[in-house]
Picture 1 (cartoon, rainbow, N blue to C red):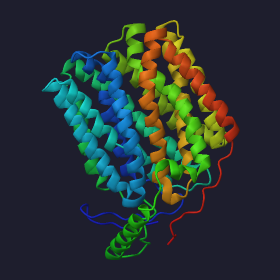
Picture 2: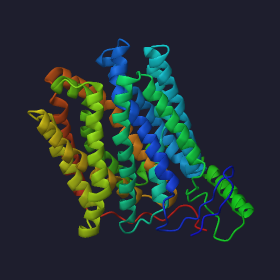
Picture 3: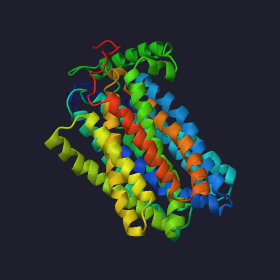
Picture 4: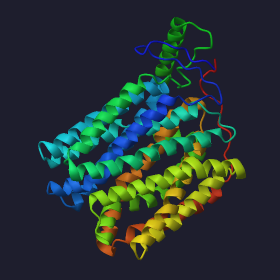
Length: 441
């Protein structure tokens, strides 16, 4: 496998073969993207509170983001199969930069709640970096063997690294330099990722028709022809739900995984309020706790998961079940922790279980579809997560208000346990992906 080198201003064509290397530029784009998100996410409740909003508005921020991402993930994931991963990554990073610019203006210049609300819409609609990243990893790894699972683990590790530094830096900057500084820095990181993305080679199978030794002109012509053919074929693509009926294994996996993700997001969406009510934490303290969770997550995906795969050779199904069970236990332990130390201890199995579960689920989902549908599968996964993000903040807030701060964690643990029980009948072995619909060149 030899990439065809071209000037920075020209599109790169990447020859796809099984077990090839994931482009390094992708890791850097994901790192900067997640770091930019982490700078701001823990601060959103305090932004809304400082501008005079109550808990209801904070919940609406999460709901608006989830609804817009529900649409964006489905559309852009499938678009990446047709127009290419690189093209959609540009849209994602540009949309993120515009959304966080709007956020900086809302909290630093105009002090406007409507503008703060509107800033979440372009972020949800356009920022689908992880959708593209998972599809790219699927393009560059074979469905057989454990390489795809290990590369998905590395993707999670890179994202976790960004979430170590982002919340910690954002909390410090907000307390010392002003509340508008974290979103401004996030915009700078997204712009830097856009520059790096220019060097990202194309990996979408429908666009990669260039072979080793071809000249640039021939490669560009082949890619253009493939793009035209794919665009014509895309007009016949059914809506997402109809498309999922073609892959019942994937549909069931997403439905059952959704129960675990919903349980996790019940706690995630109320985490800042939980920390404030239970331990009287300030935004800086919450950011430090999230950084601590990120460190555990990176350790589990960068060291624990590879060692586990290397020594025990577990299937994706076994990792799904064990990770989901650990999430269920840890959610209950976190909610019922009697003190700060036990709370911090319970976050360790929660971070490890979530990392293992999501890595295995992403690898399993990518093996349920042909290689020219990786973007659609990744988009469907994000759409499922977005649906959970729409529902979880409202349900979590209502549970917390009516039954106390421990209620979201306890209900989340039951939901995760139900998801694991449902997955038990679907797993343990992943099936070989269906034959590709696109003609292999």
